[in-house]
Length: 206
Image (cartoon, rainbow, N blue to C red; front, side, top):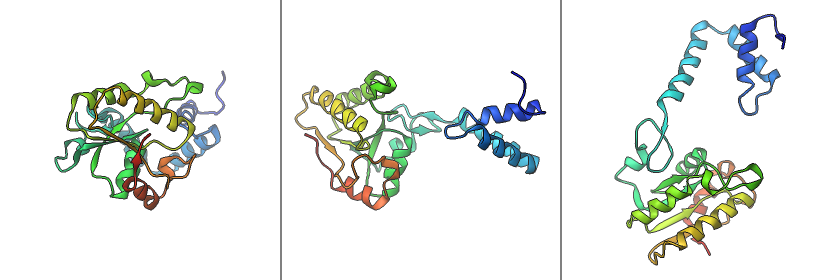
């Protein structure tokens, strides 16, 4: 296909930028032309920051949150309540819960929710590692299901609940967020006060 622009370098930049979620070719062109107008060192700094992030960040071996080390700072913090594990969909939800300042436990990031229409099943998520974590660590006494109250989130909550029930641990409490979070809302877009109250007022899952 012939280049849309006179410059091959501009064409390449626009093509790569347009691969980002929510970025069409018009927006990609606008961003590329903006960077052309900036000082060269700004573009280099941006490029280096992205490369450093991609090469330097990994996923925590315990909870699957992003980390620059084998174990993330939250899991490594001896002051956290390790008996309570909050299950969230993604890294953004960890940040949302942390901003409330109302949760002192640790996390488990699934990496998504069950969505058959998108071809995402339990095996595509970190559900197996969650079950193993709870099974192997008897110090875990509560699992908080903090997935967004959408159809996919509720389906995933119920699947995890059934799997945890199979562990036959009478001492294990499975809770969910109080319904201060409106049904259908994404967790990351819920205001901190509402989310904080939902965490504090969590209810048994049944």
